[in-house]
Image 1 (cartoon, rainbow, N blue to C red):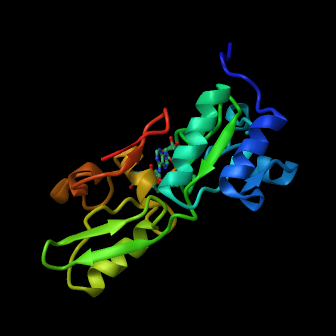
Image 2: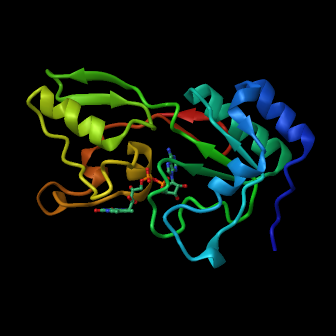
Image 3: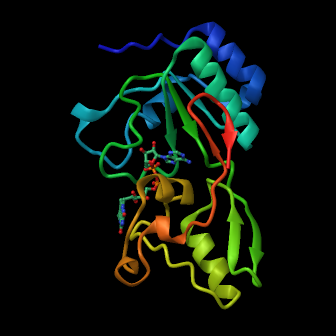
Length: 185
Ligand SMILES: Cc1cc2nc3c(=O)[nH]c(=O)nc-3n(C[C@H](O)[C@H](O)[C@H](O)COP(=O)(O)OP(=O)(O)OC[C@H]3O[C@@H](n4cnc5c(N)ncnc54)[C@H](O)[C@@H]3O)c2cc1C
């Protein structure tokens, strides 16, 4: 049995204040879209109660603080290519989409690293590295559509993993938002 509270009008209002009303949706069509990822067996599907699109780390933190204050569950979601129901909001609540945070902020050729936002597409990271004469070795077969945050969360492997390791072997540092809404490095 869920220990969470339902998403009330007060929660939706708090999310709208934090993110802007256009980035907080409760219409049936949107909720329907995010009831599953690549899982096709409808027995595992579950509707969220609200879907949010934060645009920055600070906004992600604000969503997490609101979720804690009102005791509602949050399911982060990148591209939804998970094939193990990972992005399904099994307790309802908030689906938190990272796709607005899609920037590749820096490619440092001297240090041989890139700084990217959680919602950067894996294929774009690969292409940007290639164009500068480098290799980004993370290469799940879903690279055309998945996002780097999803790769990190699942420690995605793929075609190059035997030689170069999985996603965790490609990561130097992470700025993350904790479940309580703190930003940590
Ligand atoms: C055709 C196909 C091929 C695939 N090939 C491979 C492969 O070769 N290797 C492999 O390992 N996997 C593969 N996968 C599985 C999937 O693509 C990977 O797990 C991928 O890393 C998921 O990324 P995503 O952006 O779609 O994340 P999502 O599916 O959206 O999320 C995956 C999980 O991570 C969590 N999450 C997502 N983003 C964040 C975030 N920013 N912060 C915290 N948690 C987050 C979600 O809650 C969920 O639990 C494949 C899938 C498909 C459909």
